Length: 218
Ligand code: DX5
Ligand code: ZN
Image (cartoon, rainbow, N blue to C red):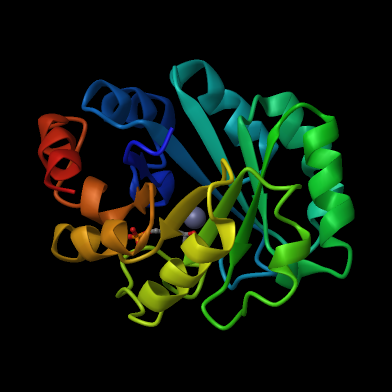
């Protein structure tokens, strides 16, 4: 299903009300909820673990899209499977056994994703195309919301689009996605847009319809 999907990243949401924020973005048109897990080691920021994802799960009717920005993903797969993740996306930069980790996600009946940092090439990707359901192209250096889109992500998305050909693999773009660049990102081949600050900025639980306008603008 290559229909465009918007996946608000809760990194920019109100962390004191994550359940309500998940409900608000879904009510306002979000297709997926993108859950950014950071361990303070793989990236210079620390968000939360599987306990928070588990707490959010009952407030997400649709897809819970877990992005593991962690140094030792193998340590956490089981916990995020138990938390109810629909997708678990790992970084090949986090260790030498990417294929094995992807297999462990699939074995648990969860969809497997691979997230490529801006400086990571496509070398080796051709050997993983049967083991992934999603490729996440990082268009910012992971760790923070509100950064600017890195333009070299556009040709990278197009190259991945070519490599995937007609395989049922989502191309998700993550970082600095705003209404001004969303068209070019989709034209390059993306079918899932992650947006944190573009959706949540200026929003609040007092004015959740802001989320709807921000999502629609993408
Ligand atoms: C960054 C995260 C992104 C981030 C996107 O490490 O993986 O999902 O939250 O936030 P914006 O859309 O504000 O760049
Ligand atoms: Zn992310």
